[in-house]
Length: 135
Image (cartoon, rainbow, N blue to C red; front, side, top):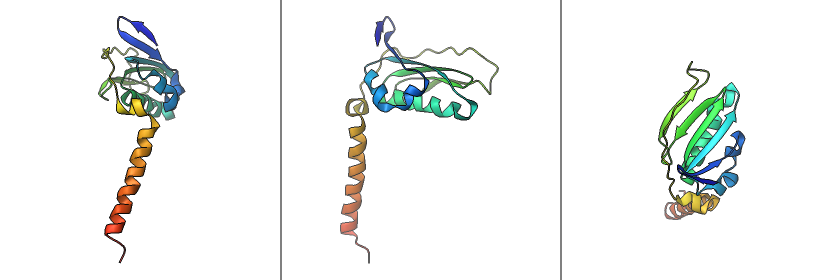
């Protein structure tokens, strides 16, 4: 990360966004810049994964991709700009993203939060089955 007048900037390259543990290291960033190059078949997939990491960790994201889908979104999951190389003739995407990220519970706890949700779901099912056994 680097401190700038626009907030704390961080970067990852293309497929790096597929690894939550790696990206969680930048949870204190305000804006994540992600250059990428995808094929037509996976263009939207990697763009949406990047979008998810931004929401998980509380930073705005600008993912600019060559021959794929580009997106900018804020930390709340609101898409600000979206452009797909294969469906538009425009080659310039201009975006204004928030320059301050937010703290998120998932960013703080990481995968532990998901395990709590998983075990909570199992516990609820067990309690339900004890109260309403098969007849």
